[in-house]
Image (cartoon, rainbow, N blue to C red; front, side):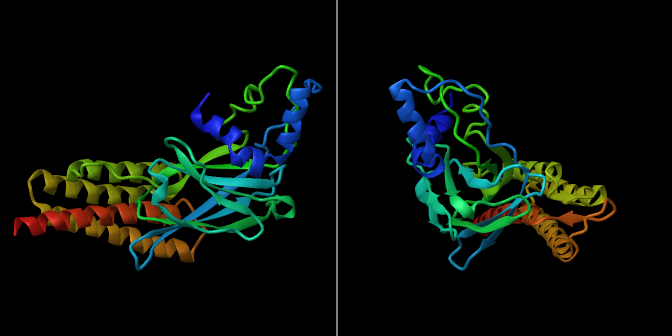
Length: 302
């Protein structure tokens, strides 16, 4: 069983914030009075997570999330968390959400960590509703990370003699709990040490993953982005740092233009280029990071 699963089920997220009723169930187990029963996991939900990232005047990245429960959901959403794998002190500020508990960053010995929020009572997100205001700030670049969200359900009774963290198909449904896991834009440490060609590979990988996740699209547009990355790679391999930098700037301009158009026209048809807020944040800020690093190399050469 993973360390995350243990932490989630034994830490404050489970027994204080997420499953207050579990305290009662565990007490019954200790008395030997609980019988086995069928249980329902918290995965009877259909969600869409919208993530946006901005860079403030202090140079920090502001990550914001909106949780949308689709009408097809069969449970209310009562938990949302974003996973990260760097020292938790790097989360500078995390915002409270009206009516929800948190933000909470569990005290784990080692990563992964997460920022989580929990919605009690009527604050839960019902099918067809949405909730925003999930925010935090950090100096860490955007990357692709996990989100976890969970539908409200009754905590299962544990068969007599069975530990409450060992119910197959429930406690091990995901690494974080009995809900659902997906991908979103969140803080991810860049590779160290910085190597320009290697980071260009990282940017290209992000572009490919963003296309697979539907954050950037239309075949011709993807080819244009690929072309700029390949042109930059060619210049770097020849030692032409300034020319390589210029191609990444062209990459950013193409990305920015389409992101603005997508924002105005959300009807992303097959014959249209698009860049969602996730694709924009992921590719723009990593491309700008590469430009900054190449500028430093150009300055050193002078």
